[in-house]
Image (tube, rainbow, N blue to C red; front, side, top):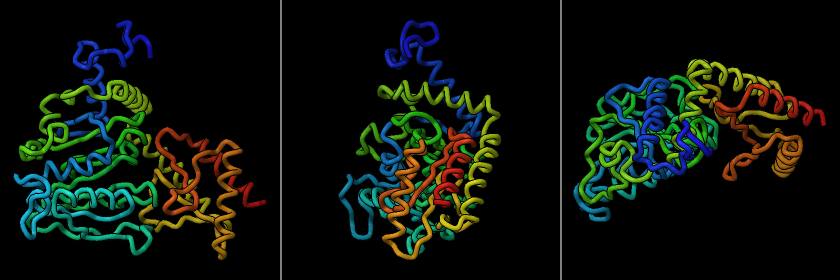
Length: 352
């Protein structure tokens, strides 16, 4: 915090272009490449704005035309660009599609919205002329994940992996772009990681602002402007921890054990259940609800559970405001003991 590597400075005080910070960002990138198996023909960018800014940067760099945003002919997306394919699997996938539609033509090719997002729909093949094909690999609010990565052929596959990055092995080569906000499995909020195949860099038209261009950030090694230096340093520490633990295969086994234990309890519980279809259950986010035919009774039970759980030291168990119920987020940093403590409390609550 106060003295990094004997420099007498905090990372927060260093110039991002100094000889003291350069090895920090280089080490962080090297560790991420090693742990994820990132091929040499991919760039790693450390940006800001969260995954939400990537909802705009992706179409601006892959799908828009030379016209300025808002100038379009009949049948064109904003900016005169190509169409982009999206699969709707929940709130964040929907937000990504709606943001992209401000800049280019968007087609939602499949959705599980009619099933309350309790599953992931079959992914249709891309169409000729698609600029890219977008999925949200793990859906935090509804607790689903893609069971299989769709094969999109020559159409770049783009995915938001904010809530599942480094939770289990992932073949980066199947994707054109991966992006993730840091705050789930990487480090503190404020840093966004973008992993982009080199052939997808440099296609943004001249009117796209510099800060929203992948070519600008890649050309300046993530230092076109001052990056989130301390966040990058913290990510490096988390990656060191994960490497020393044994890497992604080891954390994946731990995550499977944690999730398996909680799902098994839910399967056997008389009071609680998981609303998510089994093939699509997330390892990271496990929503659950109380069994009660009367909606008011169910809401009263769930509210009491969340309140009493917090009093017992089990916090942040309320479901998202859009879906209600309860949700346990068991990211990489959550130990098995935390899941076991939750199950013990659920058993106690069920006994009344």
